[in-house]
Length: 429
Image 1 (spheres, rainbow, N blue to C red):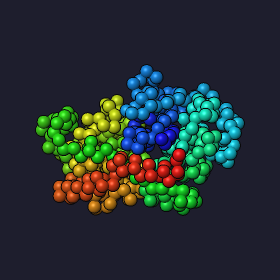
Image 2: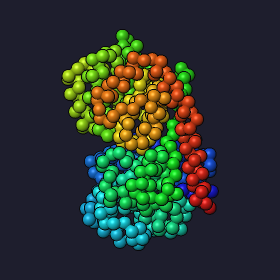
Image 3: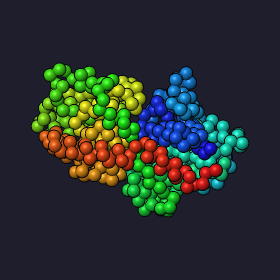
Image 4: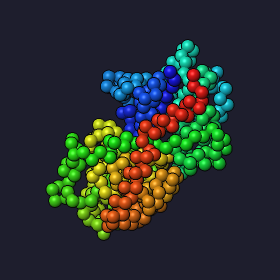
């Protein structure tokens, strides 16, 4: 049996593409390919908790703390009580760390990002009898990457990373952050564009990088059965508004994801198309809430704003219904290594609009299954939304092409099979 150690930054009920990626491939590898999968992670729920004690953490009495579906979860508390320098000194004393050849500047930046899981490292260093075939970690640029490398060097086993490298986001252009990616035995990129950047800019050999896309639970979103279907419009629209069109965004509501740019585009859209709702699903930010308040004071915009507090997880009935009843999926982001939500939209048969930056131009085939806009260009966003709203045939053709593409190439079963083949190429025994 192949024994794999996963060390993600967070885990469900934390909600983001990186967490869901590890969750779904781990579950499928365990059930279909008989892998022995161990999950070791932090107790953080939101990003703030990775380095700030005021963030949200999962309590030990939570039903998901130690078990999610068919996998056991090992969570460790984040140490907030010692200084950055104390953390750095603790790590630099570790013999496996010394063999990594990481610069002090690189270490400092990752320690600052968190999550600092002193207990996780101690757990493995005190149990030399534990054996894994490989370690797989995600995502860049958080401290669990260094923790994974330390444990990998201690056991002398391969360490794999799926970085979800947002190469178009200036925050991730720091060479001291990027340095860590050169230390892994194998990298899994989500697109060929990501691989190209890792090879060209970071000088990582091509043979050390494999390309595996993201996936989706296709049947969850493509199922057209009327049984047990939640009626999103009935819940959030008035009776007179049920025939109104719906534009959906699902993701972290920040500048990088394009959520704030969407809000700024709404006045331009409503000048030419009034019978319309905008739906935002995902964690809010202060910047988003501020812009939302401004837009709502300026114009009478119909906006449904849902957060994780309103949902029950990735397959929440309101979320799935929102995808199925929307007319357009809009996520003009510069911070996606792929974008699971595009796959969810296509599975639901609706067209997508993304930003013409980063990896997205490889994911969305322009004018075949979606449209591309300039990042943070509210006028361009408005014009592309209006183009789709006014052309039912185009919406149907783009959505149908996307659905066909997903069903053939982007299910989690396909992703898990490709990941299994990569693990086997490492000659796991």
